[in-house]
Length: 163
Image (cartoon, rainbow, N blue to C red):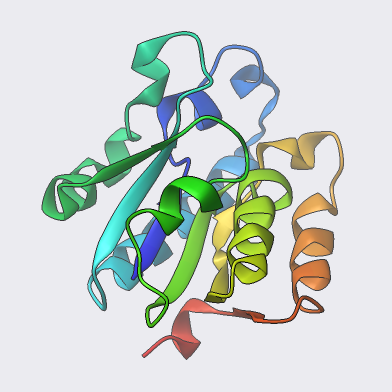
């Protein structure tokens, strides 16, 4: 199962940081969205949404993925960066979980580690993840993926490696 983490208005379009994101960031964002679309055609897809954002409209899936979200028909709500607790309620141990979305160095990272800790096998699709924080810390995405590569039960692959 593919779990799309926090690809919602509040994580990409929020006023507190969207004005800081440059053209390069948005090009990368478009590539991530394209990769998520490709992945969603290969497996069941669910969206996990961070509900810690005050404005409920920030919970909405970004318009670029609305069609994928409508086809999935499922949204898994979470309160904290680590969404593994909420996910473990709706997945089974024999499932292999693929993670993608925002932010690589926060929610994706913590959810992957949390699931691995709970005994799930997790694959993070690196080119289908991104971080809003690269404008402050340019290597945060890459460093998060490198760190995940050393976690037992977690592997990092590209979209093209997913069958």
